[in-house]
Image (cartoon, rainbow, N blue to C red; front, side, top):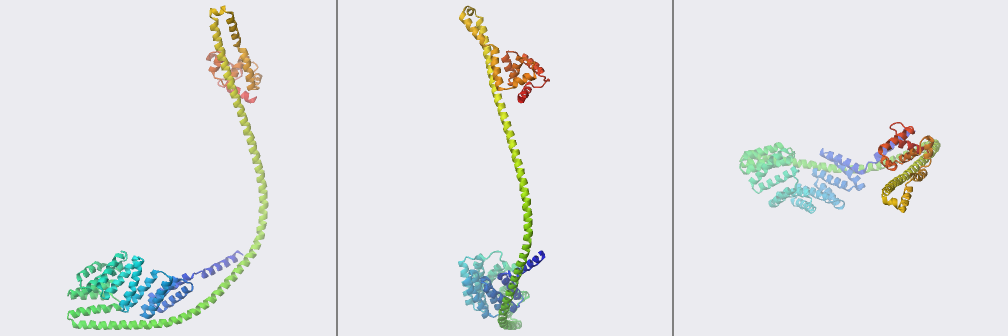
Length: 553
């Protein structure tokens, strides 16, 4: 089942890829083939490709590609010297650009029209259209095209004898041309040097030629180098250096492989040899000029004939193309129908496969749900167990907190008792000192009332009475402590128990000495004696032992 689906999917993707090629891509492919055929001078084949591309672009409203096809077809007819047909396509491209595109396509077509009129020696017409293009790019502030069209206008004005205007345009062009455009810069300087030769300013022309000579020799553009060689020949001719002038012409002849340029070179050689009064060679070059003109005329005639033949073939091709497009439309309909049938088949296969897998999925789902229910029940029990554990921990923590709170309260009350004991101890000591001081006075013994007061004071400092009061408070705060202590150590006397109470309240030796009115050494010895009584080894803390008894009560 999976293999069948995979095969159908691959077929569907392949079919979609074929149908998915955009008209723009098809046009690009046709134009690329047309350009290759044009370079190889297969003009008929080139026209077929561009015509097919134009029809396809018009069908899908691809305006830029329609313009490109029309303009290129005009260039092909121009190459075939069929100027009337080329002009028709240029005008068609121009009006199309005005309607659907921008100024870039507009000025490019105007430039092509100008070149065509210039080639046909209609310089005024050529300047008219080129000036129109130049004005548009100036308005758009397009520096790149301003430079290019200024050069073309300068060359046209030079050919027409407007040398001042030509110079102005060419120098203006040099201000706009980017330094990286070496060919255009060379073209402008070469045109300027030719203007200076026309103006008989030969030294200025020579300076320009010297400046650009090596660059022109290195660049692959033969036209620029050829023009400079002929200009040098003209320079030497006017300087009466005829041998140098002839040498430049021979260099130009070696450089040039185009018949159309030979006429200009032979014309220059005729002029030089005629000036040298070498009439035989001058006549020979005059005959060569006639032969070149005949060759050019024959070539143009052949190209025109070829152009008409191509035009006829193109009409036949357009008819065949129309038939092919109809057949292609039918084939596409059949292809689309087959794809739809495949899609339907895929849907049917998918439904069968889906129904089969759905049952399996449902069974798996039931098993998973049962497993999930068991898992949830286990999770629930685990959760309940965790909750109980948390509750127990909470109770335990609360119990510890309560114990800690009670311990703190006991310690606080013990501190209060200790303070009270210290207070009573200090008070009794003061009273005793006061009684002793007063009793030593002879006047007191004679005074009955004062003796009575001293007796009352002496009764107030009875330690047993205060100790009983303190003990009752201690029992109230530390319930069961003294009972447990006496139970464990019945041999402890009342003084020992009293000392233990003060230790348990965490009073220091100084405070205990003050209460018992004994020395620190006596306090230490009493503490050691009591520790031995309760069975503590040397180094064990009496306070820790008493605290342990309090915890267990």
